[in-house]
Length: 369
Image (cartoon, rainbow, N blue to C red; front, side):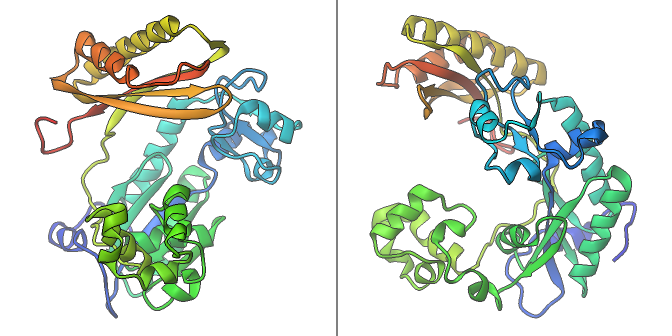
């Protein structure tokens, strides 16, 4: 395999249907840029190399806001994405705090994804800092190293590459290769690597689901894999229950899709420097955010089918509720009405520190809700 100017049509279509493989040279690679946002900032400010860097909000840790990302030096002090900026300051007072610069990260990400498309593979972009590649090769580690070398030569950014026989395996393999390494996870090594770990080590299983599984006497990946898939249906539903067991067995039928990445939603949120205690004021802010979101999606000419409102109460408890639109729309009036209808679903009237409004778009290939 060598970098090429484009993707082979018939071959790409075949590779896009990759799922499980047995003894053949079809592989899925997961490319994940290391500490992406922080790394972009260090490239812009070389004097920060080796120092703890925290990116979030407007860069002022004295104000309310959350960490978007932290460099490895800051992570060593317990700073991580989603942490309140003030907490990050307490944990790492020597850190350099920087504001989020979306345009810079968009540009860096676009360059990286263009590099990945030089390779003879199906490329599925998953966001700013990660992508899956489906390809045919007898030396996936060799391809992974060439990808790393090429990305670094063009962008000066490091990436980790996970290798698997499907997307699930490749995604989890990446965690074992960080930073800037490679790791292969296959059907043969699956239980050796993951069998004894908690179920929340799996992609798509969070702490709440893991807790529910634990209450059923299922604590590890191997125990979940050994469970009758239909025994979980009464607890998680007829689709999710069997899917959890399938995931624990390292199986993933999801193909690598080569279609261009398109955001599924667009939102706006604000963290208030003083708590909002008057819910008439909360209602006014939600209406304002909804109008802003409507203006943005009208410019993109992408109609919304559902509006979701996020409320973060004091001190840091977050809830979301959504409301479907009667018809796809970009107009401010129906989007504002849907946002306020979603807000009416909140029963708590406690002080509020953050509000967000998100418009969810029509899915590709569909025309309505």
